[in-house]
Each structure stands twice: as C-alpha cells, then as structure tokens.
Image (cartoon, rainbow, N blue to C red; front, side, top):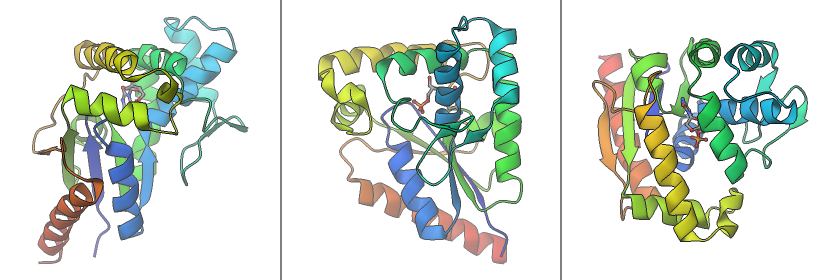
Length: 223
Ligand code: DC
C-alpha cells in the first residue's frame, strides 16, 4: 500500500498543528510543519540583522540553512529554536519572509523533497495548492476568528499566551490578511480540498473526521 501525502492547510489557530501531529502519529507518517520553516528562517534573519524585505539576503540564508523540523523540535544551523520561534515578533517576521517569492521557492523545494516518497502529513498555507497539488488527500481546516484567537491565546507553546485574547485576535487578523493577500502563493482553499470548520469541535472529533477521510483514501488506493 503506497503511503499517502496528506496536505493540511488553513489560517493560524485553525488547529493544523495539533491535528497534523495526531494524524501523523496514528499513521506512523512524518509530520512536517512548514510554518516552522518560515519561522526558523525569519528567526535567523532577525538574529543576523538582515532586512526582512531583503529578498536576496534572506534567500541566501534559506539556501544555506540546515533546518530540522521533525519530531516536535525545530532547529536552524544547530540552534534549537523550538521555543524562540513562537513569539509575536517572529509571527510578524515569518509573515514578512513568507511574502518573498525566492524564499518560498527555496523552502517549497525542500518541502517537496521531504514528501517525495509519501508517508507525510504536511501542514501550511500552500501545501495543497503549490507544494503538492496532487496530494492524495487535501484538508483545509478553518474556524471562526474568535475561536482561533481563543486557541492561540491559550496555547502554552506560543508566548502570545501572555498577550491576552484581544491583542492575539488583532495580530491573527493582521496575519490572516497578510497571508491571504500576498501575491506569492496566498492562503486559499486548494482545488479538491475537504473543508472542515472546526469551530466548536473538540480536537478528537476533528482527528476522527480526518482519519475517516484517510481510511477512505487508503481503501481507494488499494482497490
Ligand atoms: O503556521 P505558522 O503560523 O507557523 O506560519 C508562520 C508564517 O509562515 C505565517 O505567516 C504563514 C507563513 N506560511 C506560509 O506562507 N506558507 C506555509 N506553507 C506555511 C506558513
């Protein structure tokens, strides 16, 4: 049975990370958090004092970077940045570097390499549209802006937790706007994606729904 490529897209706070991790764990697949790749590149660009709109410099950094984004921790060039990339400064910096077409090209190539032999659950904004338009299963997770702000504010991995929900709601809205309106690979519902509105749904129910779609897909590939 050929291992699948499962693409999970959606805006911040829709639950992509939690769901992708659980689904990958249940299937024994790799979980790749592509947002963490943009965050790690942004972290290093800030640390190196690069202009976040300096496309050539940030693209060089992304080309040379040794990135680790598996197994729940994130590293770049030997620095463990798992915690440091979840701050509001890096939220903004990551959204800025994610607008740069050359940086996207470099990270997309790496993402395709991670997934080439299948057996991967990859989450991001453009996985089903650009990275793997032929993914075996495409999911688009969404939730109301209020619910997404509530989840993000309560997330202990994200230091936004100290900001309070109103500030988190505001920065999520600004980031959604940036992700949806940028010219290079904007956030969108990919062709053929199953949209799940997770507002008011417990995580276990979302995972169950995705696993049912996976089973249907696996059934279809063995037929
Ligand atoms: O999912 P996240 O919040 O960790 O993503 C960080 C930033 O990177 C966010 O602004 C969206 C952007 N991103 C992207 O443009 N494409 C992806 N595949 C993943 C994330």
